Amino acid sequence: QLLDLPPGVDPGPARVAGHIALGPVNHVRGDQLDARRHFEQAMTLCDAGDDAGLARSVTESPAALARTFGAIVAWLLGHEDQAEQEAQGAFAREAELGMDSWATMVSLWGASTVSMLCGDAITTLRRCDDGIALARAGGYGLGIPFMTVNRGWAIAVLGDPAEGEARV
Image (cartoon, rainbow, N blue to C red; front, side, top):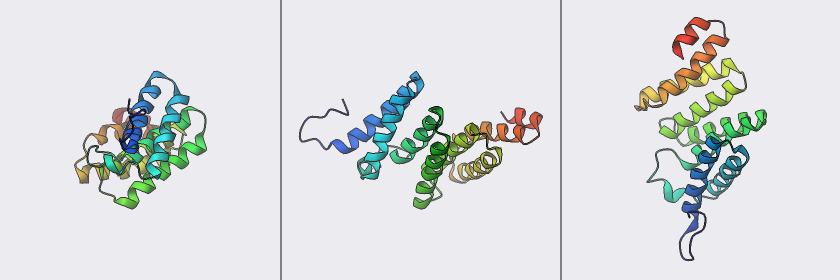
């Protein structure tokens, strides 16, 4: 319904919300191609400024959410380099807006997830350390367990499997 609005209704924010809602649903259902299509549409709409009307009603920036999950789905589709570029881009965009936001922390978690999926333990560890520090400083405790799991994987891969397992 958010993607098919009647005339006279500003379609931008609703379309962003619709694509962001359908992206994760299709991702969880295993339809990565359709999830990717929705994330790409959301990114395009956000780049055009259509997400501005949602800023008051969501904790993450819509652009951060679309880019973060879009990067993970890109990896699942076999596009490792694209996934890394998009994850780094999501973080860079949010960091430019400020290093003290929930969206920046979410983008760091997403970037740490992509680097973990790509097998890059050093980058994963750095991103997790930065993200956990940001989460603690900003009071975003919900992000800490997610990055702690990724951090545990990195510690294990870097040579301390017992400590890594304890963190996971």
